[in-house]
Length: 203
Image (cartoon, rainbow, N blue to C red; front, side):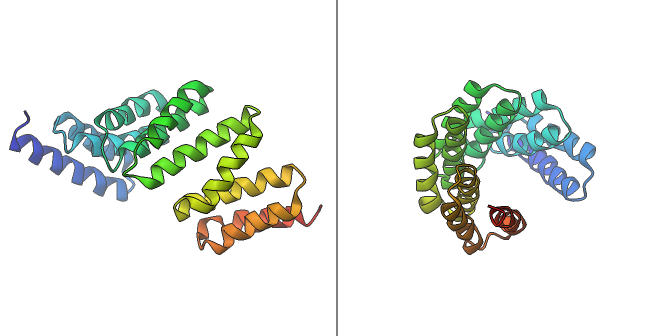
């Protein structure tokens, strides 16, 4: 069992890492996250490992990112476990390991205490299914998620749904999906949706 000193050292390193990350001193932040992970304290390691995974991913160290994310996932951390599963899935999908990606996304869906991560896992599985030719089943899941998922995920799903519908030539249905994204209030999608709507006007 880890001591109070381990917790204090880990907390100090984690707080330093987060500060350095905000200051965009990423090499120093990476070292601080590594120090927090090295504390070995079960309350610190999952959080620090998730931050470390993001920095390693952004630096192009995919294997290092996977190792860090797996520390978080293996802890089944209620806040970051589901996000770590999705991050692992994204990295595996990026290198063409669809089976591994699917397994990671399935893990994300098991985090019932994190509705966002679970919904994102379902979304990513549906997108894999769509790419693999199981389009009818994938579209049913996407339509369900667009209505039932937490708002940030529902907006992302509705955008993907709109793109698929547009590719299928279902212009009015695609327009309705894009309008749903705009109605969600998720401003990150506004430019993407306006661009997609301009493309639809050409049909």
